[in-house]
Length: 264
Figure 1 (tube, rainbow, N blue to C red):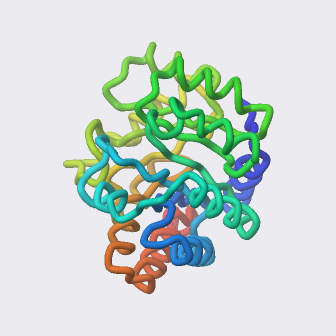
Figure 2 (figure 1 turned 120 degrees about the vertical axis):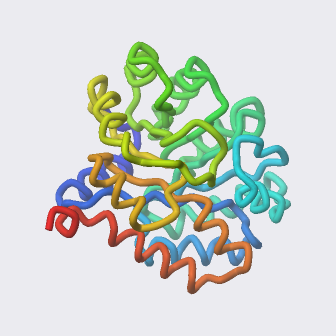
C-alpha cells in the first residue's frame, strides 16, 4: 500500500505515533458564504480536525440525507468561485483536504483533473462512480500526489471487497447502506466489518455514515478503524451559523479518538 499524497501519509503516520485515530470532518465548500466557509474550515482544524472532507456543491445530492441536501441548497457557487476558495484554502491549510463530489460534478465534468493538476486536494471521493471509473481517476491523478478513496459497504461479498481494496491507499467503510445522516440501528458489527476489510488490504481504513456523537466515534475507534468521518452533525451547525457549537463538537469528537483514553 502506497499513498500518493505526502500529506495523507504524514497524517496517518502521526496518528499511529500519537496513539490516536483520525477525525475526518465533512463540510460543504462555500457554506454559508465563501468568506465564512474559509474561516470555518481554518478554525475547524484548530478545533481538532485531522482531515477535511470538502463537499463539492451539487444540484442533485441524491445520496445524501436532508441535512446535507439543505447544505448544498444553501450554496450557489460558480466554478471560478469554488477554485478561488480552494486556492485560498490550500495556501492556508497544510493538513489533508479531500474533495468529495458526485460523478456529474467531479468526474464527468473533468473538474477532478483541474483539482489534481493544481494540487489543490490530497484525495478525491466520488461515491456514485463505479470502481472501474475510480481506478481510471486514480491512474490519472496519482502522479499529481492525489489519492482516490474507494468505498466499501457491509453488504459486499469478500470477493468484491478484495477487488476494490486491491490497489487502494484509502478505504471509506460505510457503516450502513443508504443516505447520509441516518441513525444506524446498531454499530455492534463494526469490528467484524473492519476485520473483513483488513483481511484484503493494509490501506488506511476510515468509517463513516451516521457518526454524530463522540460515543459513536469512540465505537469506530474501538473497532480498530484508522479514522472516523463525521458529516451531517457538522453541516447542521453551519445551517444556523453556530460556529461555537461546531468547534465545541469537533473538539469533543477529537477527544473520542484518543486510544489511550479508550484503553484506559
